[in-house]
Image (cartoon, rainbow, N blue to C red):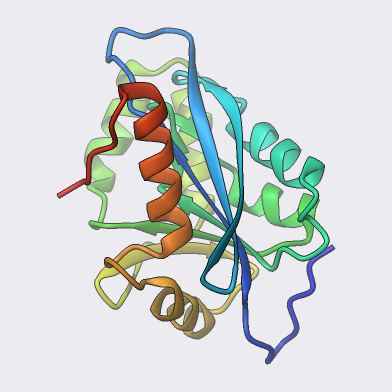
Length: 193
């Protein structure tokens, strides 16, 4: 499906982030996707993922594949490898299913030892979720952020981040998804530090 060529510029991107949620919540959490064509916002899509559940991969695939923009999308960006707590995304399954590269972007390098301990000691199905994080590959620095990736080189990931990071260190599709999700759930969005 992807129109990504080996050397062409990546211009059509969707960025996903989840909404803030109460730590006691055991239900669904809002997931927002912001579709960009170059630096212009084209569309907002939304779905739901289960708190600490297992449906984030399936929901991202569904939202992208049902979007009117799917034929043009060249990259799926995710703000972190998990949504709604520990609903871990299988980025390689998303890439293989959609045929669109996936780029996980994080503001800070995650504490993988703490994540492993939490998953293995406190989260049902945590061993499987930890394997998905490991299978996503190394966390690599790119500029002022950190990434994991499927179907895209580190050099191209850096080019995309630089191109779309207009108003902050985060690329605009992720920044917009974050602001929209926070605004819907909280009544007003807040910036992360």
